[in-house]
Length: 127
Image (cartoon, rainbow, N blue to C red; front, top):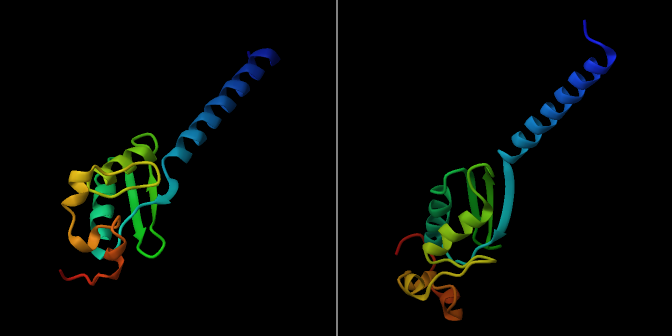
């Protein structure tokens, strides 16, 4: 037979287990947004592809006009900084990472967002 004290401990431990499972489940679908520099549809494809290659990223959308990327990711598998670093490796600056100059210089002319004149270039999807 369980005593009141033993029963209380079981209830307490079950509560702790339930809370930890709920906290863990919340990490699996965290929505994150941050700024990513770019200009056009080619940038969008490159940025989204880099983000999706990070293990744990489930959804990506980079909005050209706002320069904001929205992600849904599993924080048990990756962090927002992992995604920022992957995007920077493809030539795009984020709010807290910067692409190296060599990678940036290899971007197509219309994608060179650091050049103020690039915004006036043809940013159609065919180049």
